[in-house]
Image (cartoon, rainbow, N blue to C red; front, side, top):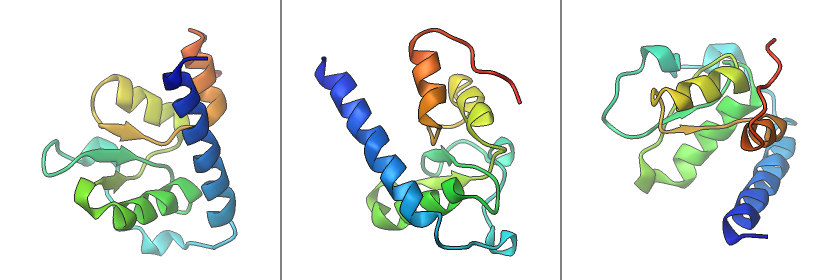
Length: 115
C-alpha cells in the first residue's frame, strides 16, 4: 500500500472518530454565521466546504479552524458531501469534508448516487 493511500486511510479514520465524538454535542442552526460556500469569494484564506448549518461537518470545520489558526481556514456551509465534491472539483473551495464512501467511489472512478 502506498504511503499516500495509508495517509488517506488514517485521515479518514481520524475524521470519522472526530465526527462521532462531535455528533454528541448539539448545535443550533442559529449559531451559523458562516456563509454558503457558493457565496464566499476567493482569497483571504482557504475555504473549507462543510455541511448544513445544523450539521456535524460544520461543527468540525469550526473546531478545525480554532485548532489550526495558522491555516486561516474559512468554513462555509453546503448541503453535504455531493455539493462539497462538486465545489472542490470546480476549484470553488480549497478543502472539503466528504463522507468516506463518496471519496472511495471517486477514487475508483465511480459516480456517487445523487440524492
